[in-house]
Each structure stands twice: as structure tokens, then as C-alpha cells.
Length: 110
Image (cartoon, rainbow, N blue to C red; front, top):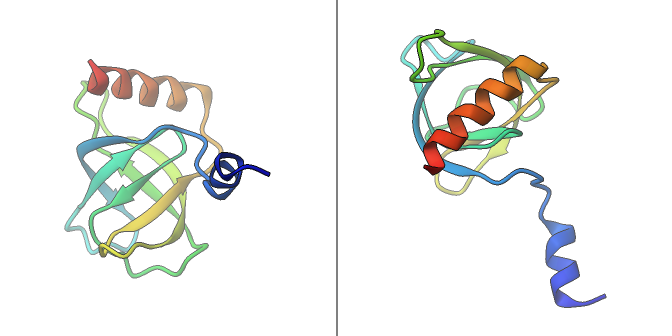
């Protein structure tokens, strides 16, 4: 096994992450809103920890800057990060949710 293969095996992400400034509401966050620091079709990284244990599922409301209102997505807490943030993995995205997220990400890359 080469070093390159080993590093690919260690990276669990399957979607490219994009830096964003996006506000997210989560169940149990106290209503203050959270800021997403990066986003992909598979999940996001919040800028600060939430009072939820790793593995907990929660409904997120992503405030995308389009005219369709917040996007509701079920996510699972994947764990805290060294920088104080917390990772979230999206659960069972519908086709419409994936299309809307992909459209937003494409606009971020443009």
C-alpha cells in the first residue's frame, strides 16, 4: 500500500467541502443560530459546539440565500473539532434537497 492510498483510506469524506458564511438553526441550539464554516453535499461544519452528543440526530434549518426559505435537513453530530466547531453529517437527503444544495454550492464556486 502506498502512502497516497493510505491517506485516501483515512479520509472519510466523499464530498468536497466549500467555505461558506451560512446561518443554521438547529433543534436545541437555544434559538441563537449557528454559523456554518463549510458545507458539502454530505454535511457541514458549525463554528461552535452544540450541546448534543456525537451520534445524535437533529433537524437543521439551513438559511440559504435564495427565495425558497430555509432548507430543512436531518443531520447527525459527527463530533467536535479542535477549533471548537462541530461536524454534522446529512441523513437521507431527498433529490430536491440535493439539487438545491448543489445549486447553492455551484454559486459559491462561481
